[in-house]
Length: 127
Image 1 (cartoon, rainbow, N blue to C red):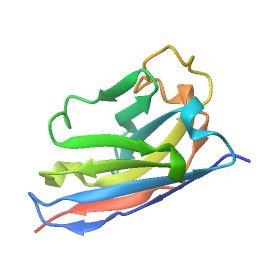
Image 2: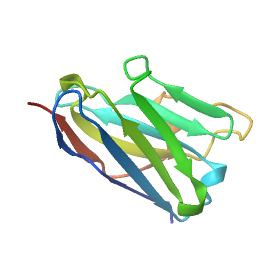
Image 3: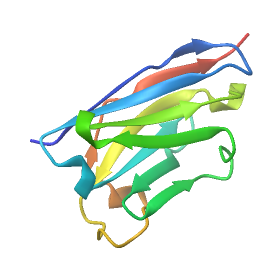
């Protein structure tokens, strides 16, 4: 049974950092693309970053500030978020894409590409 559990969210001041974790179980992490998404109140869910065997992908709004990584031995994907801004405030979700070919680079959309989702962790950037 696919399971993804996010952690690491919290309240941080602008310019600060957080590291989110996505602990996975029920599948072999190395065979799947994992994406991080976020949804702010009143806004649509959007792709933030993803990682697959082929490489990584980032939304323009987070390039240079966020870094995605994975530890297959720990079945965990991380999102290191630096230089956080108030507009980064959102509920952050990780999701698994079981349809992507191993030879393909992961994508940040459409959302239906990802078929297994976690429950989310809240990130609030505020002074």
